[in-house]
Image (cartoon, rainbow, N blue to C red):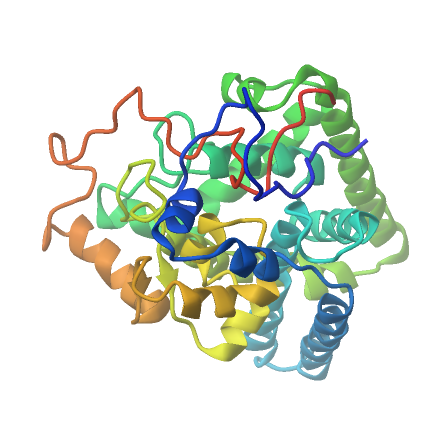
Length: 360
């Protein structure tokens, strides 16, 4: 059974139900978004994502063809890099499916999320629970399992973008999960009833990868190396750099209007990332599907942090903090996160689109 709750209600809370103030409820109180606006934004579709997905498959086929056409030349490496940048963006699609906002049908979200997870080595159930806590405790040190700390040095910045720490973590994580081993952080956000499913998914991924490896050896079949493994390794640094633009260098506080930034990327990059450059809007109301985020961005103009310089502008801001050209947001004494600050923790009537269901 799926472990993600359905879209939260935006109606008035029932008597006795604990309500946590979030930026969305604050915006409703201030008139930034009306209930009608939010309901309209939260409307999901099967056709819009289906068209996007078909075009997406076409782009993957096109970059695969580029690799094939350049196989006997030095242009192969640039071609594999381009192909890899497309492949690693399966994370964006899996992310949207994790919120059950890519498609209207839950089953479609589950199937696509599983396929994407296979491509990028990320079990869907594990990611769903991890991402739930990311939305609940965004940028809260020790509570946000996806938090990327602002690097202390330029070397640390470059090391993170290299993706070496990422792959080391992912590979060991996959083997641990296959053995049913979870660290203290994971035990906090993965309920006991989901341990078996996370373990099963990790074992299935390892079995599939092992099967492909055996087939490569027996049949001298090297296509996975050129069309998948090397491209993903080449493309992941781009994804690491993009993931950094979402929260790194923003304030380590629970207020979603200060801990997340939107980066104004060009249209092709927005399309490739399923509109995740509108990241502040996504955190503002994560039940809003990707195709409505540009409209939400216009409606909330001036309410959220926006980096008009795009991805490069966000990295300029990070580097300025790392190199000491401007104060670090995590400098001791500059910003202190209260242990009692509730942030956007649920349950809330208009909280994140990811909510753990205690019955499951």
